[in-house]
Image 1 (cartoon, helix red, strand yellow):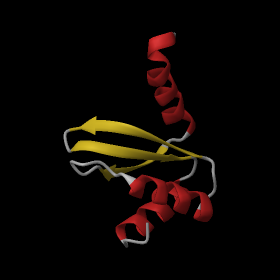
Image 2: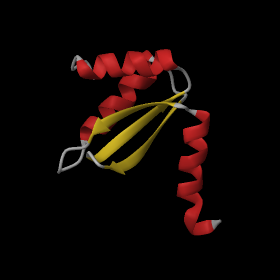
Image 3: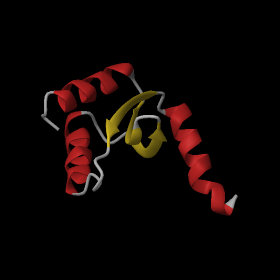
Image 4: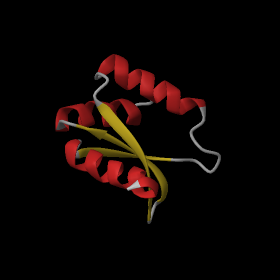
Length: 84
């Protein structure tokens, strides 16, 4: 299991946190904004969430995962409004 642990954890998280919000990652990365996003989620939604990197057709994305559709909706709306 050693070298594939992160892949297995990402798959488990995807099952446990089925509501995903994809955030585009700029060429230089999210940097300190990643910490600000995590702090916002912890404060406004709670600490029960996950984030994994994702590479798709759209390019590099940060996949924020939530247990409920409502949590994902709140995050998506706040992100789109520039509050996060």
